Length: 388
Ligand SMILES: Cc1cc2nc3c(=O)[nH]c(=O)nc-3n(C[C@H](O)[C@H](O)[C@H](O)COP(=O)(O)O)c2cc1C
Ligand SMILES: C=C(O[C@@H]1CC(C(=O)O)=C[C@@H](OP(=O)(O)O)[C@H]1O)C(=O)O
Image (cartoon, rainbow, N blue to C red; front, side, top):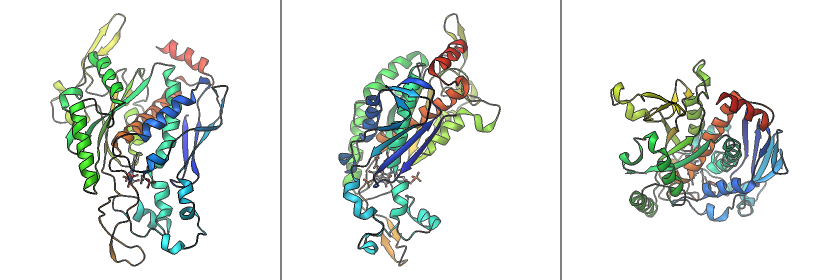
């Protein structure tokens, strides 16, 4: 079992992560983890906080001499912003009453969290509900990513829509496995671009949409796509509902702050077509084995990976904090007021696409361990080679 736990408040001292269940002897480069942390911090539409933070992993246990020990890996990511928030975070502060956050933001965890945990200060909710937590899941996923790279499994993502600006459907949605290498090249290139879109013209329109939303004090959501290549046939299972790979991936992706929809392959488009145009025909060739020429299923059939690229699409709602705030109710006076304006992102879809990669690859890691699991990398490698 591969398990990942996170802890930490957005403006507290820092964040903590624990990963348990990785085998020993996996070579890990901290620079690659820091690179993924940097990728998550970038993306057009982010607010002032990302100029303050320079996320870096500080390993506390589980790695020695650049390799995993098989023991729990624990690590810390510091919040540089803590120095600016010490007084707000101190429960014995002076002016405590005045500093309380009392005007819940529609769309955030504020109101329900305050009622559920019986707080008189919404800061107690927003500190943990914040997507700052995704820095830890990114670092953890990046570690799992390095493990799976030993087995030629890789993960990519790109943004397919921001607000109502969409990537032309024909350019990537009707994914043809024969052209997958070309698409991967495009997606890798998009990693460098501000919105992470594979088409430059669409990218420019997305940037404009974000700029306009920012100028209006508004926010935008959108859709990103995650591709996982090299996944062997048979991760996940049809034998029990909670072992299905599509269900596990959806669960993990849905847990990312702001994600409200998950689609596997052409899930929704397929609902509008007859079966003859939807199901991927099966071929066999010496050397290549079984394969498909289309991938409308997104690499998963019957709750199991079928050997094709796994394609996942996530819909993110617009950011709840608005500089032109919505109407709300003060939790102390019950008077109508405008919602709290905390410093905020305008659009975090490009950033969320990196988190999507990392939580998806973590699920693949967990299922990979379930199928080929062993105590050392060498032991797992033997089992994997034998199976392949
Ligand atoms: C990378 C990332 C950055 C985010 N930045 C903000 C932000 O700056 N302001 C904000 O109000 N919400 C932001 N969110 C979204 C909120 O965290 C999220 O909407 C909130 O926790 C409520 O959860 P829910 O939308 O899943 O219901 C961000 C989400 C992600 C993934
Ligand atoms: C800190 C991060 O994202 C934060 C997520 C977030 C929210 O409400 O989810 C609100 C903002 O926090 P702050 O008010 O400190 O600027 C974002 O910056 C991060 O991604 O590392």
